Length: 232
View 1: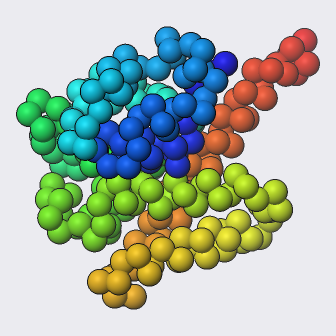
View 2: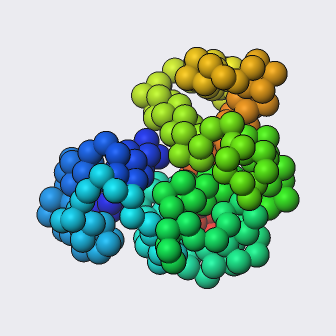
View 3: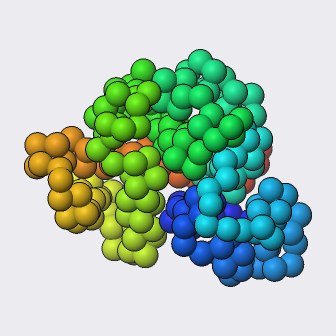
């Protein structure tokens, strides 16, 4: 049984690694793979669980890769991550904030970039995220934290999984996502409507990008499964 987290579950794990919320074992305990086969769990998580505290501990690049690959619809390699942080999204991520390790907010930003990368190039990703995070290299002027942004679209995606009546026809799906995202406006009372509207749209775009990734992977899986019927 492959061990994978939804983005909502990943959000909870990120908060745990930040020293907030439940300890990692409480989040992972519901998974059969965690209970029966710890080989699927990154070693650093098992180690962190034994020494869990309410203090944030950063992650190395290898630990970020291991964590990211626990998330469904996510595939990240160490070489790709190195290229991102040294060149492609260096201005988005910045230098490690916790000694030689990256903070959980930096990890969240990398996960956001990964979710957008299937659809957009890095230049477009920078343009989109600058709407939410302003000066990309400065966290102090963000309209919301990367983890808060990730949590919103993770929660909306989770609610879509629970709905069986959505259609891809017309704009039903988009309108449903927009209405779900718009509910989070009240969590940011300091944002004016003029500030919230573009942020809302970036959230909707990110959710659609994740769904596009899902459809792309399902298409490839269907081809692989049925190729013998298509190419006899």
